[in-house]
Length: 561
Ligand code: NAP
Image 1 (tube, rainbow, N blue to C red):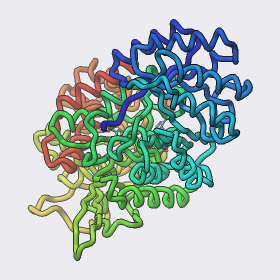
Image 2: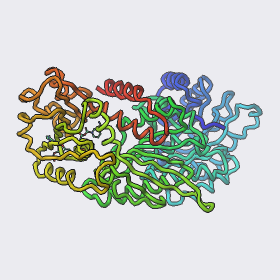
Image 3: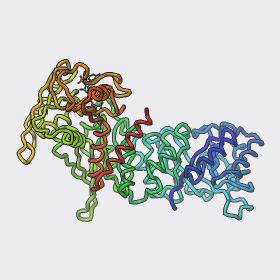
Image 4: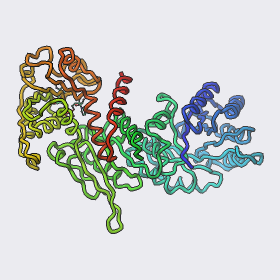
């Protein structure tokens, strides 16, 4: 049976709950869950209204009056809410399910008797009778007695569905939730709460989960980390996820606002690739690089090595690009770093592959850097010849390093202008050092890099100038700043190319100034799309729909503004 999509609705008034249920139906939900604990205070008349709500519900429903012990708002006595369940179960139009906490159900013989009566009422000789979901919620983390509690829930004859939800503290927690679904003795819901648990919600169909929850609106989330129904159905294409769906993601900290899920999921759909791409947050400590490295290795290793997940690729973003260069992934048999990664000292892409040898399946991983592929592709499109051209790079961080490598490898000469001159000098040393692999085959000569103070930028003579600092970035240290002082520059003309790696906003103050001087420009969206396209091609073996990628990113950034 396909995994159902359920929209939880916090009932505050019957009219608004019915309105939300109609909207949930329109947006593609299979059922709704009426959370009545804010509405119901134990009063008979309130109970009557809830019976009416269920009778008028446009979709089959779950009703739950969640106790404050398990994250709900109900703190009245058990008798009143158990009587509500009994009344609902024996009503003319009973809900499809009532959800009762295992802790409540097993608290007394009287409660158990009443709930049993609600789900086994003799009048219910029809299809529409109520079934019992026995649930357990833990907002702190995985309960230490999880196995015992699960066994207790499965052992209850009255339970038709067992639900377990707890706060995921790492994306690794999803692996246990998937194991619970694989070993389920009855229809089961196993969900991780919080941003680390998103994967358990989206991949539930892969492991035969009974249902998943999705909120109607971003602001109406009843449990942290819940996707909206639009995200679930349209971004993650939930209905097309099955056992064999391959999993990809963006690994970073934070990753919630990454645009990579938008382009890769749409791309998979466009080329007919059975894959889904998810944000994969991995906690990092900016003051402790070693702790971040341990976190990266352990998490990524565990995800790749779990064959049932079928994770075949990932994008790597801040702050793990440099850490990934020396990744040691437990459970992964062989990690290969391509030449660009070895030279740049940073990776942004993982490509994994499963193989079988002597009856054992094993996974291997290769790491590459598509930032430099994107930059060299864009330079090659813009310049007649990169070889011999002078390319100015502003900044001396990770992207500047990839740009310097891309340009010099193809014979370009590079000037690094940076606020901290010593850092620019270090980058120059790194770029000019003998390369591990020698020069590129084909005999192309390598360009040289030189460092200069930022104050020398106005008098510089470069065919291309690339901003690799966050200056001009919305939300960055200097959103209104000009990363390159174009009005003060004397040696530029209509053929000078200004390239900004910042993509939010699409037209940064520097790009606007360049356009106003009549110069050529490359924006950060073009770079983002190129690096994503190169990843997509590695993973799918198919050409990336770059125009689609470009349109989606520009639309999304336009909306964000
Ligand atoms: P990074 O390693 O942190 O380096 C940032 C560089 O910017 C440093 O050299 C720093 O100078 C300089 N800088 C920071 N604030 C400055 C300021 N207010 N004035 C002058 N210089 C300043 O960053 P990164 O990873 O290389 O990323 C750089 C930019 O690339 C990001 O902001 C991002 O927008 C863009 N990016 C774009 C894409 C894409 O696909 N389009 C992908 C990745 C990154 P000091 O050395 O003096 O500290």
